[in-house]
Image 1: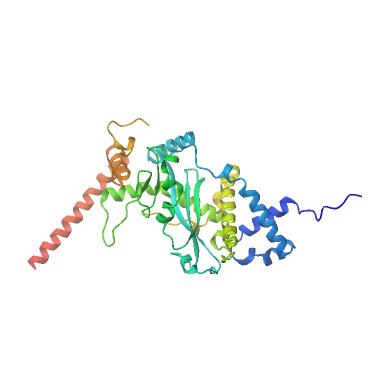
Image 2: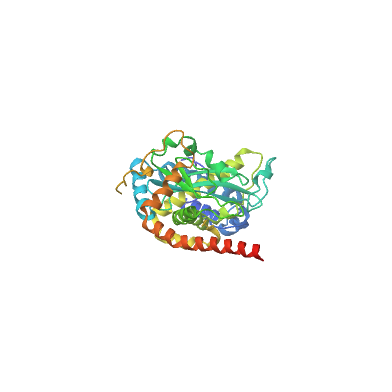
Length: 343
């Protein structure tokens, strides 16, 4: 008589459905009690099913979430240069917050106070022009600044391993400039930025919006990221489990782009997308040459700005339209000052 090897596992599709139900619902409806009512399974089974699926999906990480190789980066740079006129750009970086449903049960719980939510995790995401996530770093508390999280990535610490001397990624004004990352100009408090810098930010916004759409799509497809119903405890396993679930959802994001890219937009909600701040080589233009050692940190951004002013017809035309307005404003203010002196 053949000995029984124990209770047979539930069908894979059933276990996968339990996991997708968990990550596809925002709030407490996806907790163990909620899944018990929906699927008619015990709380323990719900947890076991989800953990198995997460482990299986995470085993695909190297296949679906990877930094583009040399030839792929060249293709990305070609498309971005053609469509957005940012030569040699290979990605867009942006930080986002994943709200936690409960206060962490740890001594450092105050560190998880985010800029927008009571408690949250800060995650750095880098994507390409097709909204594919090519690099990410999760696990920082919500109080961590985007630039601090980015500076802890391998890309920031070993940029030569990820990009050629001519390549770079872009980000918003929160990032510190370097040869491998170009950020938007930051508006000083109470004053206006220079006209050229304003136009630069406007031009960059059309490319940066891709990262906003990427994050919006991620949260739209997996609403649990808007309210993570798992508690961070002193036990490191609880925190590691949350990060594994985040890994799994990011892998699924890229997998969905491969199989169903045309239908993904319907999952994006307005609340998931944050607002954006407002191939021949031209002879002698610095943007097509590596940054020399010892150059200022925003040298790449300066070169890009000069490139747009000199060689981009739309940029030059827009500038020509705005100059008279700024000049007239200055004249009006000056005349108003003179009238006040007379009166």
